[in-house]
Length: 225
Image (cartoon, rainbow, N blue to C red; front, side):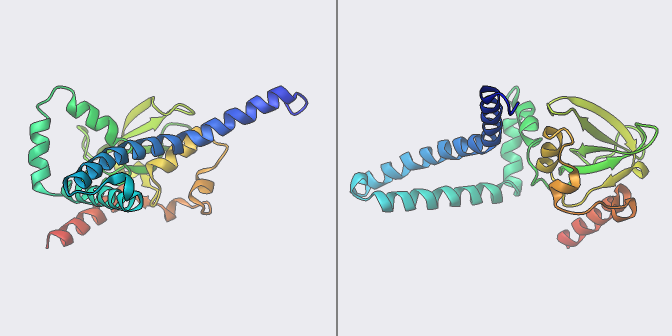
């Protein structure tokens, strides 16, 4: 490839495209949301008698402050019972729950019984382990079994679901959905240890799912008290 300048240039450009794509998507979404706040701030300026064009810096600071504050309010609101009430109304809209579930797949900040866990499981090869995801920690229809998803590489929007006994599931703490996505996209070129910036661990250093569930249950009980 290095002997052909055109192929080398094309290959490098494609690498640059896929390197920038995640950041570009995030920036586009943030800029779209900010533009809506920007319009609101401009409207507020005109109501109180300011000309937005004459106060560009103040306009920017106010729009940025409102945008960040709204993100905080929405994040706090999502944890209240009032949010559950509004969600129960939205769930009556056809397709809402499906769209929400798809979006929630990419939410690594979920807590409780629906947070995303990166896990190691055994039983799908003569030797070794597979890395997978648990999108929920609710028990399966089969007692003491839990649903684990094994995604494809390098296209992670497909895969297989398995019901795995809790004694065969090990939780990789501090690993997120994003970490697993990097691992899949790299097709194993980057090891999971490289992605987490840690050394290889023995099974004894990982947390058995049953122990993780018990610890999570105790933490929830403390928060209630």
